[in-house]
Length: 92
Image 1 (tube, rainbow, N blue to C red):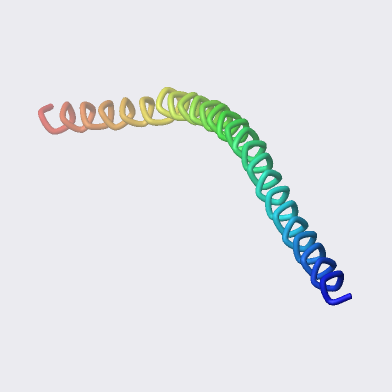
Image 2: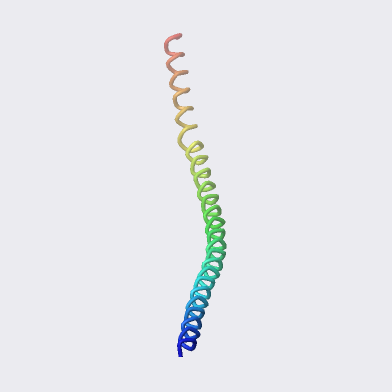
């Protein structure tokens, strides 16, 4: 009877150890797979963000060039004209 109880205890200990190994291994494998999926999603997000940034920069460049053409250049030309008129008024 004593040998039988020792054998049952060893079998239970072996089963517990096997269960622990299986659970640790499966969780490790799942985390590895999910990290790969996460990296792929992260790459997709980075590409999408780069495209969005590029579009926004292009839109800002267009706005800046329109502002220069429509506001700054006429303003500078008007200043120059006023300076020329004042110069001609002073010189006679």
